[in-house]
Length: 67
Image 1 (cartoon, rainbow, N blue to C red):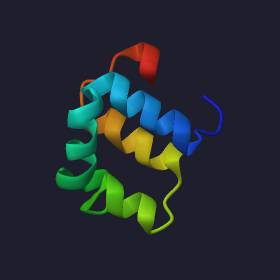
Image 2 (cartoon, one colour):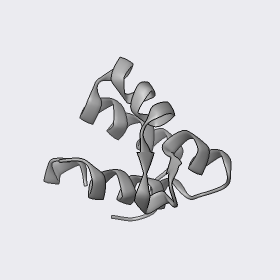
Image 3 (cartoon, rainbow, N blue to C red):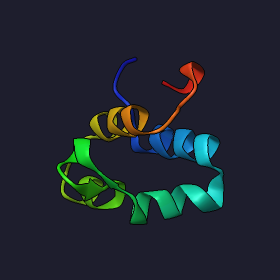
Image 4 (cartoon, rainbow, N blue to C red):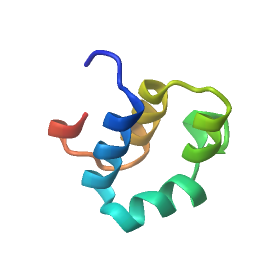
């Protein structure tokens, strides 16, 4: 997988969790692979969308087609 753009990141989040729940996961779920940050905070602090997506994949049961 090449570089993940922010729009692609959110498309994958919405496809994985559903539009309403994806936002909740991003705001509320602390991910160890992101240094104990949420998705929202990691992105706001400049973490790349690709790195954040890899952490989501490692944390949740994401189907291969979205990885």
